[in-house]
Amino acid sequence: MEVVEIKSQLLRKIEMIQDEKLLLEALQFLELETEIEYLVLPIEIVDKVEAAKIEKLSGQFVEHTEANKLVNKWLSKQ
Image (cartoon, rainbow, N blue to C red; front, side):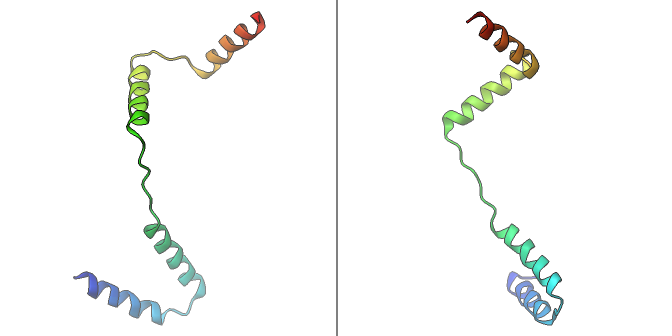
């Protein structure tokens, strides 16, 4: 089935629908499908994310609770 034929069928079906709720749901779905945006990150950010992934996989990180303990210890020495 070609795109033109599919659009034509959709328009005919939409014209027959009287249920406002159904029409609003269809509109909401179509708006979601047409509003998809892709985020393009600068290469520097992508590189930092990749480096962080490697650090995480190799165990070079501190868990959140442990980091808080270290920060509190450092702050208490100030």
